[in-house]
Length: 110
Image (cartoon, rainbow, N blue to C red; front, side, top):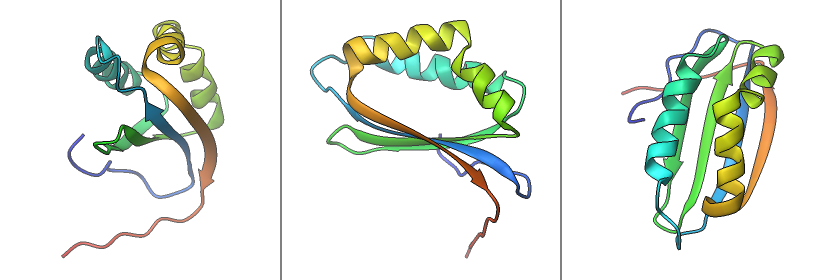
């Protein structure tokens, strides 16, 4: 993702996935991440995502959703469940998931 997600006016929901990658095992990670991005875009209620990762492996992905039901459905999607398990076993040292309702949003552009 190379530009900010284009989002509607609030309210909507944000799922904040902050994680520390285990840099010892890279095999398959990029393919999985690309597939999850592609799959999320197909889910009802998905609005967009913003993501970044540092050289030290620390990353944050914020996905935006229309409602809580859409978030719950995404969490239980079959391929996403497999990716979650692989992440725990192979790719992440730790992670935190936080869900928030976005009430206001502001922008700045030059």
